[in-house]
Length: 522
RNA sequence: CGGGGCGUGGCGCAGUCUGGUAGCGCACCGCGUUUGGGACGCGGGGGUCGUGGGUUCAAAUCCCUCCGCCCCGACCA
Image (tube, rainbow, N blue to C red; front, side, top):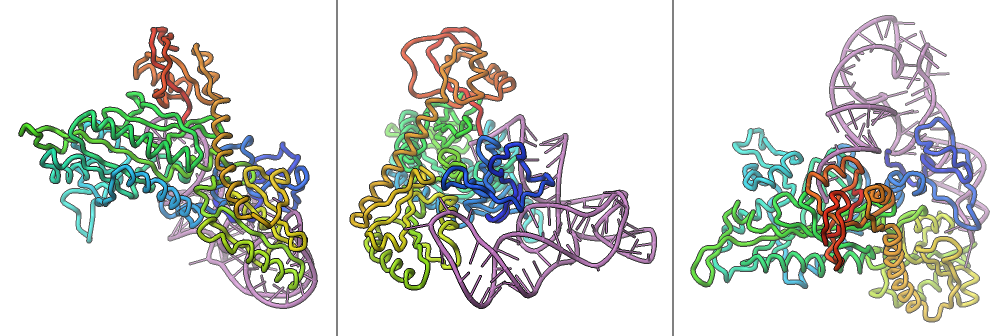
C-alpha cells in the first residue's frame, strides 16, 4: 500500500458490489463510479476499506485518511509523524508526564548512542536485543575504535551512570524518566504499531530493596499506565504478569497491560519491569546500607510508546474514519458555517463568533471557514479525522436560535440533532464526557463479548480465532511455544485477578489455581 | 529471512505483451456559477518513465545489473 492523498478511490468498495473487492491492483477502473449513499446520509468513505473486509488495510487507510503519518520512504521502516498524528502523541505525553511527575519522578535525558560493549554486559539482554540493533561504525570519515549502537532501550547506558551516582542508601530511590526515540531494526513494520524508530518514555529507577522495586513496578502499572490508558484513552486493559517466555530480556518479572483490538487480537499497551538485581550486578550499581554493608541495588524500567496511537485507532475507529476520545482529541469541536451568499455568510459567522466567545480555555475547537469547500465535504473530512463533536450553523439556525450538533461516535443522522444556542457550551462539555465514557463502555463490552473461558484445547483453538481465551495453565515455556506454533497464540498475560478455585491446565491436565489469557498478538 | 506486488507529473493509475509525438482521473492555478452530507462549467500549468549498462535508425516498452518501497508470514513495544 502506498500512501496517497485523501481524494483517491484506490481501494474503495463501491456500495453494493461486494464482489469487486481489493481493487487496488486490479485493472478494473472505478474512477467513474459514483458512490451512492448507503442509507439516508452516510456515504462509504472514499479510500477507507471496511473493517470486515480487510482489517489490516482498514488500519492503514485510517492512518493515511486522517493524515496522521506518511511513510518515510527513504528511510526503511520509519514514518513521518504528520502534525495531526504528532498532536495526538503530544496529548498522550502530557497525560502521561503529569502522572509520572505526580508519582515522584523527574525527567532527564541520556545519549542516543551506547557503546556496543554495554549491551553485552547482561546476558539475556544481549540475546534479546542484539538481532535488532543498528550500529554506528564510522564518524568523521574514520572507523571508530568501538562501535556504538543506536539505543533500542536505555537500561545499559543509564545503568552505567547510576553506578556512578549511587553511593549510599540516602541516594535512593532514584526515580528518573526519559522521553526519547529508540531504534529497533524490525523485520516487519507498520505505522505506529511497529516502526524502526519510535518515540516513547522509559522510566528507570533504583531502589534499596526488592520490595521497594516491586512496589514501584506495580505503582507504575496501576497509577500511571492503567489510569492514563483507561481514563484518557478510553481503552480498557487487562493487567497482569508476563509469562517467562514473554518477559523483557533481562527482567526478573514483567508486568503488562493488554488491550483487545477490534479484530480480537491483543495489543500490549505498556510494560513495567522489575529488573531484580540483574542490571545492578551487570553495571555494579551498589550502595552502602545503614549497617555500612555494600549491597547491590534493585532496579526497574517501564515504558509506553507511540504504539499507543495504534491502540487508540484500533480500539475506537470505524469505517468512516478515525474516532478520537475527547480527552485526547487535539480538536474536540469543529464548527462548520453554512451559507448561500455573502449576506448569509456574515450573519452566520457573526453568530458563530458569539457562540464560541467563551470557548477558549474550555474547549479545543476550530471554525472551518474555508470558502472553497462545500459543507458536505467538510463533514466528511472532519469525520475522517475523528473530531468528537461537530456544530453546524446555517441561516435557519440564525433565525431559530439553534445549531446542529453531531457526535462522531454515532455517525450519520442518528448522532445529529438540533439544539438551542442557549447553553451550548455546557451542552457540548457534557456531551464530550458522555462520548468519552461511551467509548470506554463500548470497548469494554466488545472485549467481554470476545473473551471466552475455555477448558479444552479445541475450545482454546476456537477462542483465539475470535478474541481472548482465559484458561487454567500449568505448562512450561516449551508448552507455550508449542501452542504458539500450532495456534499462533501466546500467553498475553497472567491476570492479577485470579479465581479462588483450582482447575485443570488446558494442556497438561495438571491441577492449578493459575489462569492465563491466550490470544494472538500484534 | 522466505513468499508476493510495485516503481511513469503531488496522489492513484493506463500505456510495456506487439519499440515510433508520454496519456487519464484526482489534486493544483485562473474566472464564473455553487454551498444543510464528498458541487459544476470553461480555460491553464506541471513528467530526465527508480538507477546503470546493452540491443536498435529509434527504448517507458526488448535484454542484463543494481537500488528502493509496500503487502503477507516467522521475530518483536
